[in-house]
Amino acid sequence: MPELRIDALTGLRTIVASERADRPGGSLRAEPEAPIDPATDPFLEGHEQLTPPEIWSDRLDGSAENGPGWAVRVVPNLYPALTDDPGGGGGDRASAEAGPRDPLAVERGDPDLFPARPAVGAHEVIVNAPVAVASLAELEPAQAARAMDAWRARMRAHADSSYVHLIVNEGRRAGASLPHTHAQLYALPFVPAGVARERERCTAHANRTHGRDLLADIVQEEVRRRERVVAIDGEAVALCPFASRAPFQVQIVPRAPRPRFEDDGPLATSLLLDVLGRLRAVLGAAPALNMWVRTAPRGAEHFCWRIDVVPRLVNDAGLELGVGVHLNVLPPERAAELLRA
Image (tube, one colour):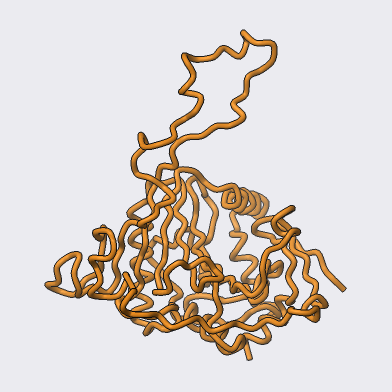
């Protein structure tokens, strides 16, 4: 029987309906991606001239910037979603009016129904490795840890932003326009509504429980029950969340609650690579996936960072897009069981 579940972190609802996995086209398998063509790979070591000039790099001793000899390299996004020029383009349309308007001088109030202003912030690309691989899972553990250290360093560099969102898209189905493994960082001038909702729920839980951390309490209960736990190591816990929005969604959470990923402490690299390997084994190939780091937004007194991994095995349709309710055909308990095995 289908179940309606509520995510304790976000308050969002998911319908878990395993019977729908039996419908035509409902199988959950990953299709291998085409191999990277080194000749056209702009992120390959030695092709630095194909990207904008670097703004940060983790380099071997003696290597010059914008040339070979790097382990992780950061460049501005060639097609940025955010601008560092507050005066460039657009502008507040209300300011284009001839002088200020007095709402009391008209018959009714005069709300601005179409507000707009420049999308000011930063949009960076973090190239995770100099070699032509398509997934973090293909990196040696030391290189993956070096890449995640770079994520942390760039998030710190934008600490004055309202929110810093770091993502990894792997595979065309997940929106990756270039196959070479890379992350993207968005330094936003606002706290997104979904993140603000989590901040509010974490704060309410702390107030209700005399300072306890919501995500830490969820993890402790999940470990006690063992139904949705995938793996545990010395740094973190991997689990399929109770109200998973998609098949094989996995969250990686530090064993001890820490508000900001960018602060010193565990990176959970080993467990992340372990989870990616388990997904590949269960699905027959490395799946296209979206991954993001959820860190504490501005104004959060009670929060715990995590990494979300969502394989792109199904498409959002009218229910998800129309009302924001996700339909998951694989119960997270079964997903965790398969990944454990």
